[in-house]
Amino acid sequence: MESPEAARRPSIKSPRELEAMREAGQVVARMIAAITRAVEPGMTTQDLDDVAVQELQRHDAKPAFLGYLGFPATICTSVNEEIVHGIPGKRVLKEGDLVKCDVGAIVDGMHGDAAVTLPVGEVSGEALQLIEVTRESLNEAIAQVRAGARLGDIGEAVQKYAEVRGYGVVREYVGHGIGRRLHEEPQVPNYGVAGRGQMLRAGMAIAVEPMLNVGTWRTRTLEDGWTVVTADGRLSAHFEHTMAVGEDGAEVMTRLRD
Image (cartoon, helix red, strand yellow):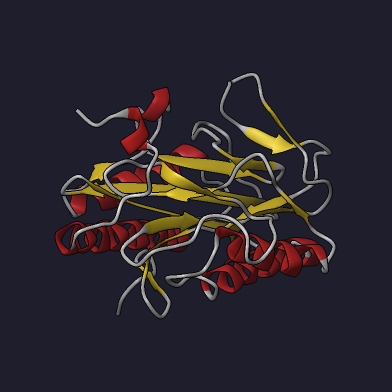
């Protein structure tokens, strides 16, 4: 049995484990592509979960979120001021909404995890700019990922890109190591100081997931015990990719291959 200390140590993945993660990542990418094609006003968040389930079944993969710590659905769907961990259900999506879909899959015991923020029909200029800045803050973070880099390099990249543009960077929820477990060490904050924090090593796998708010970075959790919302009720966006750390950069596993 693995000791608690070993469980907290970031693991270096074997070539076989990395290959399984690539497959899991592609399943996740296809789930997100299917959801992106499907989303439109009038759908419920449960409809989006159903789309994800169909894609999982098509690829004979297992859901990573269903039952994890008791979560009751296959994906997370968080709308407008909801940041993460929203539970799919009867809520009907309206023109102008933003919906964040966090998606996970397991292939041969290895996990893939990614998130996307999607506009529902025509959305406001404020919402479009939030989506673009959050997506680009993830790209800024990915550019920092390589063997020898520090976690602070990733955090600072997100924080500087977001805050100079006036957005709040969520502190309470962060990225994470990933592999045989959905959440492994290390934690990957979206804030920090370059050159500080744990050093990345080739063969580690991490999920980087900036969450940016139009207003304050502070959050609160709804009475369902899962859904995290902005403390001031303003919009939030979330993007995430799973990646392997290489000597010269990141291999993004949840980006759809041709």
